[in-house]
Length: 163
Image (tube, rainbow, N blue to C red; front, side, top):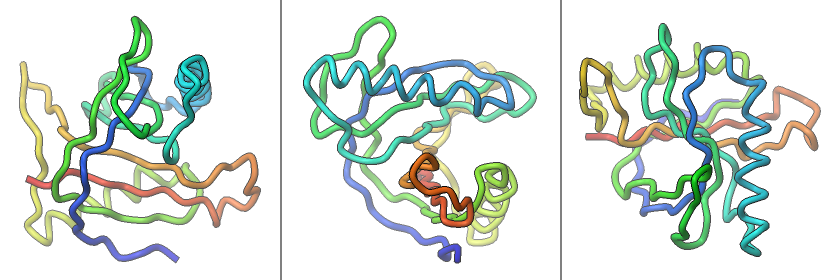
């Protein structure tokens, strides 16, 4: 029940996150990062304005990945020495909604990237010291596996900023 990839315009989105360098696999550390970001919001009397996400800043699978793990918020706020804040850029995004277990996301992402290449879609990236940095490569997780036991109903939305 996956939805065909599409292009859509998105407005800027403020967020809070924990920034980290992680090796693959990194699924075991995500819950702790989301808990930290949520606790930070709670300490400010705030709640997320949408589902949790992972923002991939770098994606060299042979090295550690630079990621931000967090939540969207209604408006910009200041972070601290552990919590980073920012804004996901406004712009054109290629978007794909996937239904299934998270273990399949590497293959699903590869298919999404192949779809983009076939359709001559390029990404907003830069190179710095031989490392590719993404301006907007986000995985959104609208389904909470703690409340939905069937992995076939888990949703992941890939949203990558187009050049």
